[in-house]
Structure formats: C-alpha cells, structure tokens
Length: 373
Image 1 (spheres, one colour):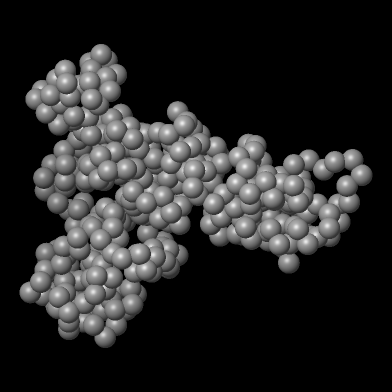
Image 2: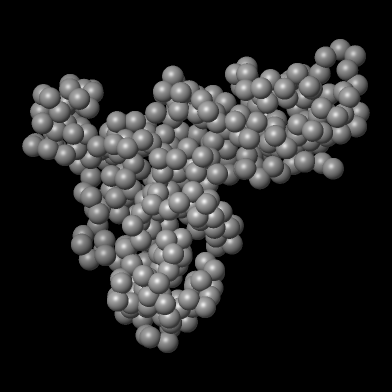
C-alpha cells in the first residue's frame, strides 16, 4: 500500500531512473521465485523454509526524477543495500527492469556496464574505501585516472571538488592523517570528480559519530543545492531520511511499504508498521500547514497575516498563536483555508488528528517556502 500525493515537480517529469518489478533472490533455483505466483507470494521466512531461497528485494517499482534526492530507508535486513547495488549491477538482479536515461541497464554488456559505472554513476560507501597509500588529491582523482584522463586535467578537476567539499589545504595528507568526517569528504569528492549523473550513497555516515554525521548531512544538502545532482541515498536513520529526502521509500523484508515525501510518511502512514516507525518524530518539525488547514468558520476575521501552505508548523507556531485570530493560508493568490490556535496546538502536542492535506503549488516541505512577512 502506498500513500502518495501529486508532486508534479518530482513525479510528472520524465524519470531519469525507472525501476519496475525488481527482484533479487539468493539461493538454489532462485530464478523461478519471481515467476511462480505461489512462491512470489510467500513471506520471507516461509520462502526460506520451503525453497532455501531469500528474497532480498521483492517486486520493487519506483521512478527517480532528475535532480531528486531519493532516499531508501529501512532497518537492517530490509534489502536497501542490496537494492542500491542492483541499480548498477554490482549485484545481478533476478528479475525486473532498470532503465536509465531510456537505456535498459540489465541488457548492457560488460563493456557498456563499465562505461556507465565510470561516467554516469558514482558510489559513496559506508567505509570510505580510500586507498591508504595515496594522498587526498590522488584518491580524489583515481576514477579520472582509471578513465584515462591526463594528469593535468585530473589534478585540476580533483582540486575543484576538493575545494567544493571543504578540504582545501588537505590535498597532500594521507587518509590515516584525517578524521572520519574528513575521510568521508574525500570519498564524496572522489564520487563528484567523475561528474556523474547519479550519486549513490550506501549508508555513508553510519560509522561517524553523531556530531560529524549531522555535519555531513548538512554538507550533502549544501552540495545538492550547489551542483543539483540526482541522488539515491540509503539509510536506516529516519531523521537522516527526513532531512535529506525529497521522497522516501520505506522497505521491509525486501518489499516497499510506503513511498512518499517525509510529511506524507508522518502525516499519512500507510499501515501500523509505518505508524510505529515514525511515532517518535516531532510532527511540528515535519508537517506543513497544508496538512492542518481548515475552511473558515462563519464570522471569522480574515485579514492580516498570510502564510504559504509549505511553511512548517514549527515555523508558524509563534505567528499563529500571537495573531489573535486565524491566519490565512494562501497559495498563488488563492485562499486555501485558515489555521488557528487549535490546529497548531494539536500538532505541537503530537495529537494525531491530521486530515488529508490540501493540494497547492508543490514545494519542498523542508524549505519553509511561502511565508509572507
């Protein structure tokens, strides 16, 4: 079951990456599982018991739009890391299609696959994967060296991305001389150096301490804003997913549970599993005014402050409570409704009374765009 709204800036544009009916099954005669309904319908535990096979990825379908940060989230064993490796066939899928820029990646031969991996995709891993005997600038330029670019060209490009990720002055250090966060910046710079169309992140910050992890999350947000790369980001951390993702795919036992924006997962969980998953999220930090707007009541004053539908509840709380009367919610000059003390306090108190959101002009729920001073 998927709870999903219309966001034309993400979902109606032509997909850069389209995944349809993707399976990855490990075990004897694994290829039969996706094509035999009685096996495909089995739970993971029963399938393992009956056939000795494990369905790590189970019938997944989704599109990733150009420039989108698409987050895949789930607990350990949910299949998210297997999924991201299937996208570039580091792990060979069992069934389904992976179409990138109109090309079926599953049909690519080894030569074409190497070209795609070198020029179109770059991956950032959890454990950095840096070469210990190479200095920072040589680690960053390694992919360009493999691609056959001249030393002056690869040094110039490496320096550009080193500056971009905030490592200026560390070019001649070895990995062991850097902190964990700085090592991960080297990995990020190396991924960016190839100028890929898609950046794939496999839980890249899991090994970092909380403070450095938050710094790196902020760095990814900044880099996305500056370079606009399409990103597929794997994480088990809900707060990380909410901070980074335009949309989030929540997985369980290899299958999709819900696909939507962060506020959709929090405001309209598809089932009890998602509801429990997001239970501790402060709703005021995620939900926008579009989720709690109501129609004006007879006799209510409709003058004064206006706010946009994509302003976070947290950001609007003080203004609404101090206004003395309901605040108008307006999008492109159209009155969508009003917000009063009652609606604001219900969310701040984490009372789960959120109705379906009104549809307005699409913006990222993270930006707080639309506020009128």
